[in-house]
Length: 130
Image (cartoon, rainbow, N blue to C red; front, side, top):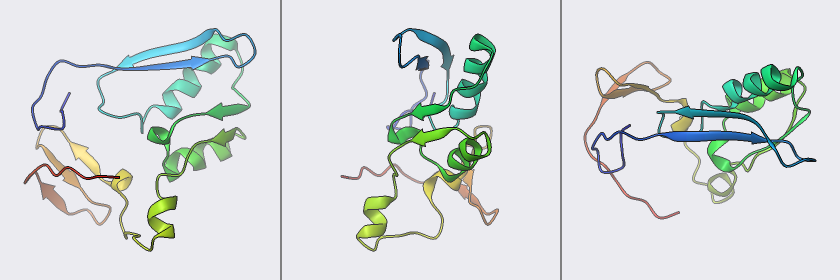
């Protein structure tokens, strides 16, 4: 897994879905992706496989927020409560045309592709506050 300092180390990202009423784990997965952004669909599928039905409500932290995830949950008729990563920036007038979640990473080339299909090679790591 690629880390913030640019190094690659053996690492894992654990996903867990818990039943609200009984507080028991109904689905779990271990992945090697750096963030949770692409884990919503697989976890919903995992919950369906375990319980035999899909959840009606999903509570998740801001790491799962993306418009793709919201569209998926809406299509599946699942109520979602996920903090909007972009609300504060938009409120402060700091919107961007292309959001970070829309960029696709190519591990083989160690680069990203923006939504306009341009290849963006790695140049540096930048730390931000907020």
